[in-house]
Length: 160
Length: 254
Figure 1 (cartoon, helix red, strand yellow):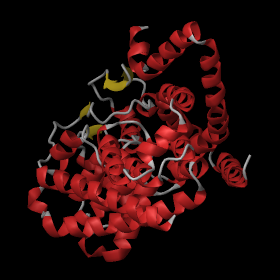
Figure 2 (spheres, helix red, strand yellow):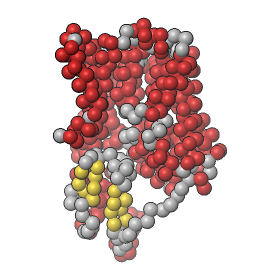
Figure 3 (cartoon, chains in turn purple, brown):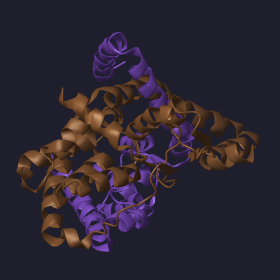
Figure 4 (cartoon, each protein chain N blue to C red):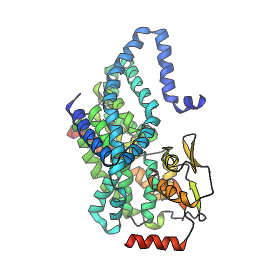
């Protein structure tokens, strides 16, 4: 286990023990809620993890490098941002998927664009948002989020 | 059975691919399983701790208190508080819609609402842990900083372009003493059933009201369920009892 995961375990573990001592019922209740949310995602999580295996086996790294890493980065970024906007998978399961593709040699620029639009832009939830906050708000928030996602990914490409 | 398959369509599809693969190309199939194994192992190490962290944040961060400071004059401080509120909340972005609508009605500024919604979507403290694990701590930190800056700028831009009048504010009026659930927002967590099993039931992953007749001794429990609902999906208008409310106010002053 890497140092990062270890320290996270230690901090959370201590907090959990304190929490149980202070208010057992409250802790257990909120664990139940958290369990339910995780439970709903479990099928997707397992699915994605096994899909990663297939990708690593069948898509040779040079293909990934060519389409997501070479001179096509700009187009790849726009396409990734669009895919991120229409997909509705929890970010939680997206990280290992994106991580594996980056490990294979994909540029991080499209990766960041995908991760950011995945959560911030929602074609599927657009109607719901429009209903609650009005057309103008929903349209502006989603399109600005899209633009900023591209911007963030470009800046990250320069920094990292 | 059909329900389980439907709910896990994606997993079923992946399993089918594997089945076909095992029959046609044993070697590639076991290679794929082997490749997945590393990620499964990593996921198993981080998942329980993320689960715990989500639960602990939900239990101990006093969101009601945070929500007090979100008005039009809140400025940059309001932005940071909004950022914090969004970051510590659990659930997908659509779970944030009703919460933000309520805040807007209570007087939160539009820029703060944009910040809460965006932070709710992108910045989740437990998710940051996952990102650092599968990409790298540096990747996570840089993306976090850039996203935070972007979100605050976005809030500012949108608050200049969208006015309060542009946002539909119809009051949801329901009869007194009535109870209902906004089905679209319910995430089926089951807390309401836990608290007031006489009134709530989970059916097809959504809570439903099974008893319209609200008895007085249950009101407290229902009120609690409404407060605890992570998606703010419960609408409950209490029957007016002037004497009782007066007493309650008195005890609060004491």
